[in-house]
Image 1 (tube, helix red, strand yellow):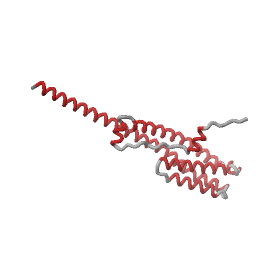
Image 2 (cartoon, rainbow, N blue to C red):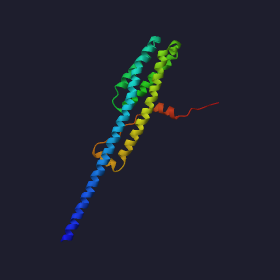
Image 3 (tube, rainbow, N blue to C red):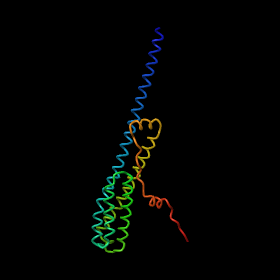
Image 4 (cartoon, rainbow, N blue to C red):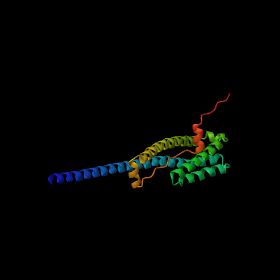
Length: 195
């Protein structure tokens, strides 16, 4: 009788240990997902800081160009419209699309500036152009970091048993911040040299 009681207590004890171990593993996985989700949000906020910096530079750039090339109204309006659209984007994919549109509008603005030698020589314009270029580089680095963090988070979320815990608590994969398809293809494509 005593042997059966001891065996029964050992079985119950074993079940309790296994249950506690499962709870500890579940808590560890959950906390890891929370950390990776927070890291993803932080990486996005770094992009957001650089985008806001970019948005703040654009009105000054437009005003400078307007002083020299006021009759290029359509180009200037397209830049402002693209800036406003980018500032109003809500999701990562909307932001990426708006940023691609804004980049195209800025390229048009800089192309217009080529026709105005006085504008190209203006120190304010040159300074703003340099600031914008620097900001574009920072956005590129922040985007790369964000996409790396998203990749790590999404891969973690898909692995077993994390996928079970993640599904139970409603964790969703994060969106990547991609270049426009045409722009991405141009970057990937090697230039062709013909003789």
